[in-house]
Image (tube, rainbow, N blue to C red; front, side, top):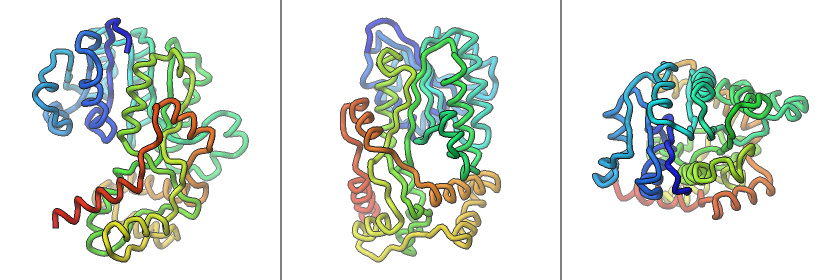
Length: 325
């Protein structure tokens, strides 16, 4: 990274990506060269989630600012106060689009230099839309990536930008622990065409690379991040069955399967988000979720390594679960 002073604001620092990215940044970048600003609605929860060692959590260049991330004037004041030049934009759930575009308006107002947007592995260009890519996109948290990315691609913002397009997180499988161990069920539909998988550590590494680059080589580009293989239901069930030493079946994507999935999600996620996840699963079943050889090789050049192995993740996770029993 450049030795020039930098100030980086990162949203959703307590999420799956942030929990890998923040320690990586603090242990990789020179204290003298950057300030890391983490806006959060709950500072205590963020510190707990990050679980940083004392040597990192006490660093003076780490700023944890408590406030409402939906309050745009507050976010704008943080950007100004800390002279932020780089922003990693990563919102999720029901308010994703409005929070994203509101943050970007604040970025424009204060004159940041580079924006990194965590999106999803898909072609959101106008050419792809005209060709019908939106035909099966009914999930709002997937559909909102189209106007957001197009705002960057066609809106001529006054800052450079890099988009990261990850696939389906390895770590999402942690939610299926009880069903896998108790019932031998992988209870998420992987679809007939399969889904690429990605380690959140690879997304964090991609974010680090984009921060280091600052838009010089990868500005104005979208880099897909994930496995070249698109894992189908039977393949995932076999991986988990072999790792756990038991028979495992995978949930299908028939209407009755999706209804069962929605019923299981509602108590934990609420009705709106549960339905949105079901609509995403339906889309994956119809269209698949993956990348081309060219996109995969571009990822290898960007990250400086091959994608992490989903098979290794399954084996290590199953071993840890069995050790807990």
